[in-house]
Image 1 (cartoon, rainbow, N blue to C red):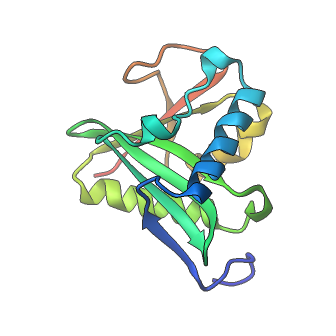
Image 2 (tube, rainbow, N blue to C red):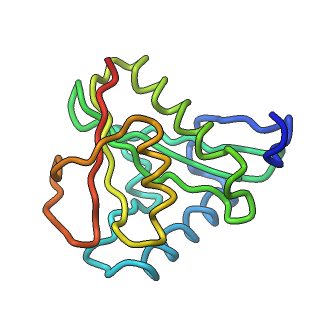
Image 3 (spheres, helix red, strand yellow):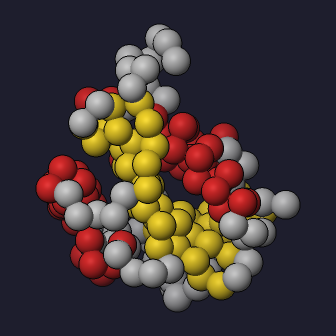
Length: 161
């Protein structure tokens, strides 16, 4: 990949969430979400939440540096939720989020899911994320799973078949 500041060493790996680098990366994610959104509207999973058997977590690595992450959480045999999408602030707009999202969508299909849904923030900060999801075919929808209507959240979904 060229032009986006990405290294040829960029790779996406399943992460068992045991390393200090990913713990720090996710800790910053949760802190940032809590600084932007009222606590009752923050749905970011912490390390314990991401270590559940129904969650698969991937890290985007550039050499030894975590530059992005994302996960899917199985809701039922047909439906999964996209969780914990994040790109290192220094690497925004370099294609990492698109690469991760392509990987996760392909993996969700491979696992037999027919639908992939997500919750993200409704505020201005989250606009680039919403545009990315729209670009990948996600459409706005009603709350799913255990979510409830919330003015700080938007919900999106797409079929995979």
